[in-house]
Image 1: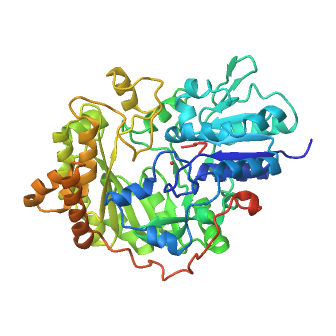
Image 2 (image 1 turned 180 degrees about the vertical axis):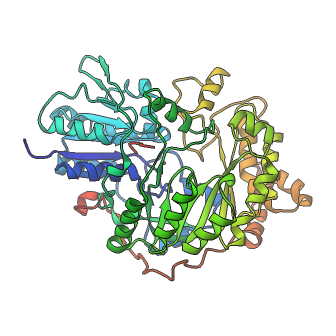
Image 3 (image 1 turned 60 degrees about the horizontal axis):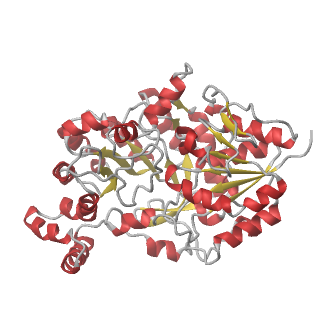
Length: 538
């Protein structure tokens, strides 16, 4: 067998989406285990003129505790070099044997721009390009049409990437690799079958050395921590129509398998302990869609396991999954913050359009629990759903007024491919099947006569003000919705008052303090050998 190949991951991303992609870190670990070399070109800290600063827009909209000063204190800032120059230099020096691009839908067009810069190298050395992630999985017909794309991964990538790299290494044909659609030089497409879901308990610990040091830090509640993503569950048992989980489950159910899987707790512990002892992680980020989709035995095993880790952590879950028992236990072992998906405040609309069937009173009562045990939480909301109106959006505001959240945010609905609501939008003529959507925090993509984009933006702009200020101020807030001279003046005054009265102060360090990450130079991977929402596998 010939020696391993050189793999270059391409990760199109914008500043503000700070959590490192666990899928790429996992794939890197798998490929290194197979004897290959890996590097990454990650655009997170570059000025790429694509979309907007995700976390930054949330800060501007009063949805999160301000954190930019903390980022600057720790030396985390945008690069001042050209991404195009840095990419070309990396490619010329590293000479990859394959490009693997991992992309979400909203970053796809940026990914194609990146690949355009390596077009000549690709052609000269006949280097294949494999694209994967949630977008290629659910819109393969769109992705495979791009001339720079030679193959796409549909579904999970662990086995497909390992197989295709071995074949490139041994100069063998890879047109029949499972989970791949492969395009030949004449444009003919081989659509291979999808294998059963992988056994996540056989995966190695993710390779965070792929990423430069700056990518290991993330803001949380106004502070910045060295934070790693931890997998406990893959998939989600719920069927929210704005999410791709239902279609993901349907994709694998057709093969006779369930996509929803849980990782063994002893393996979760092994990973947590390794990150704490070796990488000096300060904060754990459990990225399961619904962290508390556990039975009592599994939950109690987590509590016993985590007692030894003793690091603050974040999780996301649904209001109906919590109770006094589990929150009190989680608080004892380090639960710092929770994000709850509420999404909409009108019960009938929420059930019919989103397939979320809980009552508002039940949500309100459940969300009284975290603060009883000193746990801060945020509430996630969405507006601009198909058939929604501005009046219905105010039901979301009203529900949030009855919830004492530390932060409440709101996004524009985005009809991503692979979600039931995307299908609904196409059927209603609100979007064309070939249209590629943009970032969650970007301008609304749907133009609905009963709830036009400008009204959606008005709700988003003043959402936090409506939630926190007394109703006798609502006329003033309504005027602040307008983006004219008077509206902007009122908004600035209200924003200042909000920050003084209602915005939570940055959390005290929940684990006693860590050394400042000062003046870390954010370099490209070429300068630091061995340092490097993803081929998506969830």
